[in-house]
Image 1 (tube, one colour):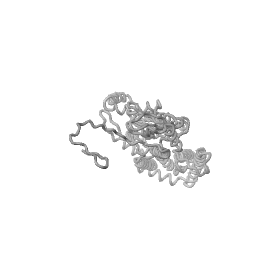
Image 2: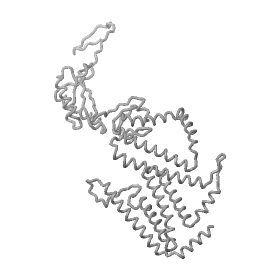
Image 3: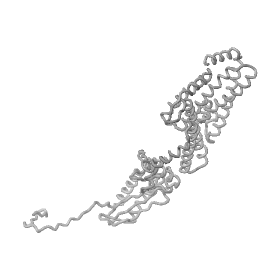
Image 4: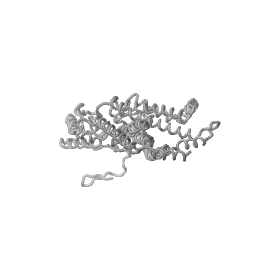
Length: 445
């Protein structure tokens, strides 16, 4: 059978007028390139900011359709494939077709490779396994194209059909497993593409709140992946009614071993729905203080002011006390200072307020406030309360600058900062030896 197919291929080569097909193929490539180039130009111009100094022609709009250089995306091989398919039927009316017949599987393989490569790079840009998947898809696609061109594909399919595997009382052929794996892979890639498109185009343009955008993106991706998984299982031949048993087992597993994991996922959706925390908030939880950088469905990322980043399970935000240091547009901070009892309280309070107002990061509204809090053991205890708009920049250096200003102001006004004083009363027995006083006025026993 293989020899017959090869002989037919050689016979068609002798009978075909190859140069006519070559001209038709070049025309298809040129037309597809022109349409793709024009479409990429239009889309790229629509994505250039109005205040950009670059020309629309120099703007590269990287996407699944256009890639980075317009023709390295998915649109170019798809358009070429459609044009070649139409031209093949047109040329077949006047002469035998060979070159267009060979070009058809080549561009089918190229379209499949572009689809997998572009979608995987857009969905998992930092994954190390994407490169291996791209190479595997490329080898499989080009191998399928060679079998298609040489006419060996039906023979290979027949051989794979004869190889079967037994799963209990069911026998499945190698061809069914292979075709099911290809169908499920294509389905999952398409689902990833749709979810990424919805997240980047529709959600970012229509939803202004970042937390709601996040929960909408997570819900859409989870729902589409679930639907894609059902289609993939159906393509492989799995009976979907058996999933009821799997669902019952999963419920038992959640009740025992996976309850912490389920609690974190549920807590993540509760946080996003209630919007009690937002990305960018300054929070303190479990003794760790920092800025919320991302809210996942299982955990939340918090970056401290020193650059350290911690992963906090979402359950902690529901079951423990969480301090949100940025509920409004500013954060209030407090400094404490003690002065001597003979100090002018009005002058001290003015020095404290002036030291805060001398710092540009301190808000003028609300104005800094100095108060007398307590009559301490060593002096008068004052507190200075002020507000800042940028807690993410840290407040250690700001506290130091205000303390230095307070110290300079108190020293200039000759106001004492008291040392700790302690009075010790001795109630022991009267010494038996007489007390002597030396010439310097000192007494000794």
